[in-house]
Amino acid sequence: MRIRPRRRAAVRPLRRVVSAGVVLVLVLPAYACRPDLTPPGAPTPWPAAQARHWQWQWQLSGPLDPAVDADVFLLDPVDTTAAQTAELRSRDRRLICQVHVGSVRSADPDASRFPDVVQGSAARRPESRWLDVRGWDALEPVLADRFRLCRGKGFGAVALADADGYAVRTGFPLDFDDQLMFNRRLAQLARSLSLSPGLVNDVPQLAALAPDFDFVVNEECVRLRQCAKLLPFADAGKPVFHVEYTGATDDFCVTTVGYGFASIRKDRDLDAWREACPLP
Image 1 (cartoon, helix red, strand yellow):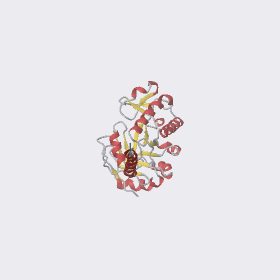
Image 2 (tube, rainbow, N blue to C red):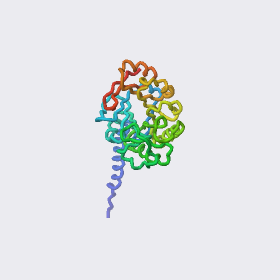
Image 3 (cartoon, rainbow, N blue to C red):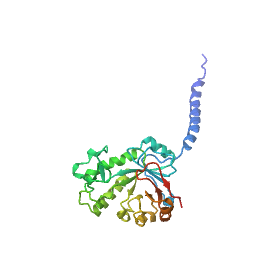
Image 4 (cartoon, one colour):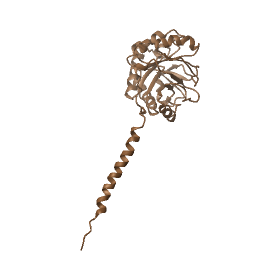
């Protein structure tokens, strides 16, 4: 009996290897051509060489306008959807979420998590109360979850609002050092959760906190004659995002752009409208 050689079995593995090689050749270039986007939850970088050249937008009310000609968007993390942040990130926008760390509103989704003992006098926002920033053990878990919400929605930075309760009547005997320790703890917490930390206002503490934070957001330093107090950030190559609510940009831009700030004119309700100062 003549035995015929089984050639097919020898050929099939070779064909599979060739096919697999073709697939790899076709697939690898496709991945290589994908744009390098900052992944959700990665901290936002702020290159010092670019500190004087940001255009920014601050919107907390009204329908979000993703087409605004700005590099940086400061938004509310509850009202902003993950789809909206994904669209902005696809346009290479840097995203900052604003988190109220020193106050709580009765309408906040996590309001019930703050014990009554750390809630004090009426705060700036309607139906809100100041928090006792000395009660870190009670506040940290709730604020950490607020930061995680930002990270989960694709923000890379967090701006701490109401981080200056020591300067007003909160119902608690807070002093400068109490606030300083609280704000530094929050900066460390943000970094531990892969978020770049920034401050909203808290002007008297900026010189002390400049090493701890990556940027500052300021309201009306021109009208209040406080712009020179923001220089510890600008001089360190850190962004100063500044807004005025009154006056013409032709008047205040000369001052603030000269300081190295990213300045805009907004309405107080912080809707989509803005008028930006020209870049230097």
